[in-house]
Image 1 (cartoon, rainbow, N blue to C red):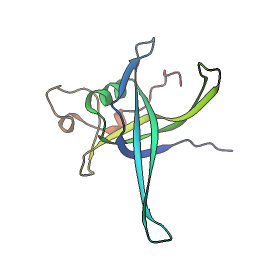
Image 2: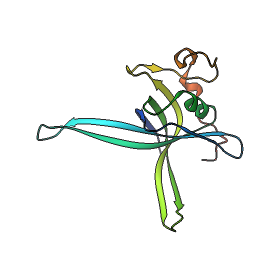
Image 3: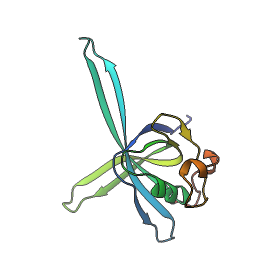
Length: 144
């Protein structure tokens, strides 16, 4: 049986990215994205649902997201679902699904994308700084 694990989300960051480093000095950024869905119910009333998703990205892409993103910024992420489980301080087993980001693309408020690459002059705006989004793939040396 074939397996397939792919997630694509477009939404707004729910909090500022949180940068940390693994013992190997690989950058890690955690952030949240909110996606909205609107529809009309059977009663004719407009309805909306919001889905909050935790995301994690590694390496140079993590540093780029940390540098240019903040709460409220629209972002498209592509990655895979990862299942985390742990035992809390109270002894209760806990778990959650998270998206491990493999690629991303900045989205302007108007909806057009800003393609992403690494590097560039810190005085330039992100839109001037980006090349191909494909340059922001995952790393094979990441332990997840």
